[in-house]
Image (cartoon, rainbow, N blue to C red; front, side):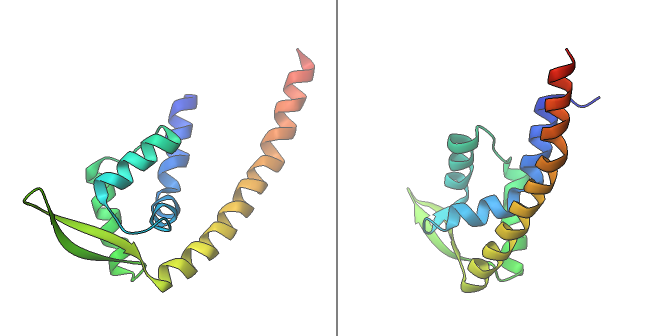
Length: 118
């Protein structure tokens, strides 16, 4: 049986692409800052071994682009949302909202039924 934390983690991971694109709407940033923002806003984060391949996929799809920079003498990539990424985010967010609404239409009434049975 899945625990609540496992269910939350699974939902978070399945939403990772739209979450990363959403963070990049605030402007260009590097991978570590994306990790920090996820932790700050959702109390969840993606490991580097999950985040950087995802950033690579998003870049290969043309949804984000990167610019090499140096910070404290260390090479770093700064990622930004492309026009295609903005369009994809709008579509993804619409589908994401519809999916959440569908899930809620099943789960919330069930929770109310269970709560009234005590």
